Length: 400
Image (tube, rainbow, N blue to C red; front, side):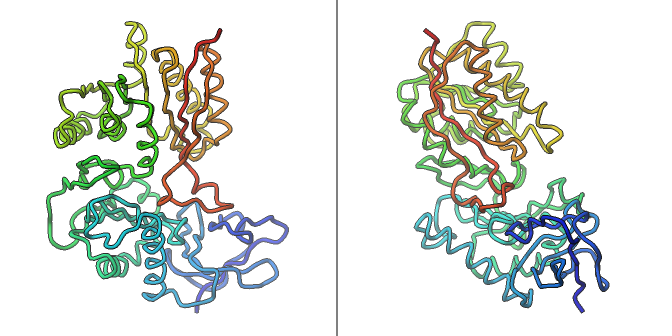
């Protein structure tokens, strides 16, 4: 028998209005026995069926929803979910075959594709996946089999080395599924050939969520000098070169990431106009300002500064510092591309921070475009956690 999770009465449950999570403090009782990761039924305070999901009492989120229909959660269920996710991307990008397409796509985006805890990316036909929660990890072999059947990728790599798995009581594992291949895979992003390290790169190897924003940068870079700060493997810098930039400086704390950027630069014939510097971006931005350096365009793509709401105040201070420095080293009328991938930092908080930084820098900030993550990282209405990326393309003008 499936265990039943009974919701507390008198509580405005988000799960009743479309949100996919149930926290332990929202639960009155649990009827029946279960093991962590099992499928359970959720019922309203009035005893009505709400949804099916998987349970983990060791997680901050007690139950993550899988289906609002009372149905079997089995291989056919996962096949339907995966087929739906793949069809959405085919429609978005006009893909005939994911295995043969040279581009990169996020094929499954966890809760936004109604498969909580599952992330699947594909780069030039090579598939990388993460099962980040216990409830989805229990179905890992089924999911692998289905992805192999539905996508027929050139190779599959497991990147379950994310520390978040430990919070779910899961081991950290990574490696090839099936036949090994060269982990430095090549893909095409907006016409640029990019090397992706699926074995040692961050997350699944590359950040596809910024792909459309890298393209949006191009009209502003022809003949310009560009600083790509927090560059990782050079995505924005490479795109700037494709847009005709005169010179690009990629700045990142990781030598390994810059090595990937250099290799991609060579691949595209950009090496002569690209420079690379390893260092802490906070320190280097301060140094560049003190030396009177200037750029036509500055890109800021930092990692998440806020892992929880408790960290937001400190994160906003960090965002303000780097944006203030960037505004000070921009030439008059230059362009700033700045972003935050901390979902705990709201759009309103991010924009207020930018206003404060511009005021302190003595600048006007003209917002050219307000953007977010690419559409293969879909946003669910009523689920703010799925809308995490804030990207602003701004012109920085002197006050007069």
